[in-house]
Structures are given as structure tokens and as C-alpha cells.
Length: 374
Image: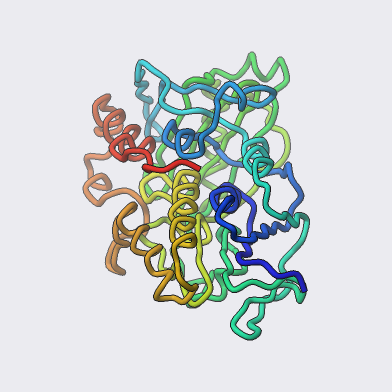
């Protein structure tokens, strides 16, 4: 049996950020992931300057051999009507490919790594957690996404009672002919809201790569909405007429409507495993990174790993992201007043699409960077 102080399950942005933030603390840390890296991870994939700041990333270093698409405009509309384009006059975000971004973050980690290894068993032994009958630690951190095996230890775990947003997307490198046929521009991601406001689709060109997807709270109609959106975008020339491969699916929880506990005795959840995706946009990278940094601060200072000691992490999450909504709140991210008959007109407004949709919901310009760096 190999003994560690902390075992992190999941080597995505949340897990790798936590592992790196614990360096120098004296904590012996193991990070596990079922996949080898670089891994195939389809994601719209944009990160704001706040994320770059929190991670201490040198943009020139990152851009060397990797995709880094500056973004300064957004094109926003409701399906079936014309879109509104807003120029922010400066770079407000960066497009990245998750296969590159996640690998870059993990390569910076010096802790022990065990990749291409699935978690087959988790059990308690003398107050410690034993994973796969091979690794033992008093603290287990779930960072493995929506279906993280550590999340299953808390409450009811991932299950049918959760209000889950389901998404399908594809990302591919365009051929010269496809690039010429694609009207979407790299510096201008496109967001298209469904008419019933239960989800939205996106077109995001990152250098020579194109990402197209759609997410909804109504999983049963996801395929129909995606097919209709793709066909409309093809007809309008926004995307190439020939899309390779199939769309891949994934799921996540919106913060205000997730019910998963964040801590228990010897257990913490961070990132998507905790259901921290922003309620208005579904973005999970910034919450993943910030939750990992907040968790690291608590782990460094905790006298023990009891639930009462770790509760400081839950309190820090509430201060940073607000309190979760009650059961009476609607499941999807948009406020009730936006769902009203005003929605169509609002989505034609430059002020609303810029100040509310883009700057507030998607860029979180009103939320300052976390006042700590890895």
C-alpha cells in the first residue's frame, strides 16, 4: 500500500490546479485519472483573463505550439432571428483546445501521477480511504467531473434526481475548403439561444479548429434541436456543409441548482464533480480552477480532515459563488423575466446582449479575479 496525505481523483483543470497549489505544503499528493494525457476533451473552451491570472499562465509560453485564440467580439442571437454583434474593443477572453490546455496544466504538476487508471474501488480502513486496494490517504478529493466516483460517496451521488444539463458538440480541424466556406470568425464566438430558452448553441472558431455544440436542460429533445440548429447554420453559411465525425455528449450541473454536498469526513468535491458550473452560462473552467484554489487553502490550514474542519471550504464556495437556490427555483440558467415575451426583443438589443448576456453571464466581468495565484 502506498500512503499519501491527499488523493485527487481527476486530472482536469480542477484536479491539476489543486495538486499544484498544494506543492510546497508538505502534503504528499497523488493525482489519478482514468485517461492518459493529452486526452481527447471536446469543449467550447474559452478562458477569461481572470483564469489566466489565477493560474499564473504566461500567454506567450502557452501560445508556443498551442491554440490560443484572442476574443474581442461576440455574436448573439435567438434561433430563427438575426444575430447582434458586439465589439468589446479589446481582448476579453481566449479560445483554447481542452486537449492542449488540460495537458499543459497537468505537466506543471510535480506530484505523483497515476494516469490511464480507473477507480475500481474506494473503501474505508482505519479512518483512511483506500483506492483500488493500492493507495491510501486520509483525504480524498473528487475532481472527476459530473460522474466522478468520489461524488458517489456523498449524499445520493450522481443520479436521476439531479437537474442535469446535457450537451453535444464536435471539434475538428478544418480543411482549406471548409475554412473558406465557414463564415464564423475566430475572434467572434457565436451564441444562439433556443426559442424556448431552455438552452443555447454555439459556434466557436479557434484558429483552424471549429467547435459546434448545443446544451439543454431537456435531454429528450437535445438531438432534434441540435440537428435543426446545424442545418440552419449550414444553410446560412455560418459553418461548412460537411462536418466530420459525430457529436459527443457530456453532462454537468448548474451551481444554483446542484444539491451535492461539498464535504464530508475526509472527502471534498471540486469543479464539475461538485456541480459548480456557472448558472447563467454553464461554463465550468473558472469555477473549477477557483474551487481548487479555495480547497487548497483549507487543506493547508486544516488541523484534521473531519467534516467540521473541511466545512470552511463549503463556506468559501458560498462566499465566492453565492448560495445555491432552493427547490422552487427554475432548473435552467435564465431568469424568469428573460423567459417572458420580452426575450425575442431583448436578444435583438445591443445593450442587453453586451451588458447582460456577454459581460455578466458569460465573461463575469463583475466578478474580480480570485485574490490568490497558484
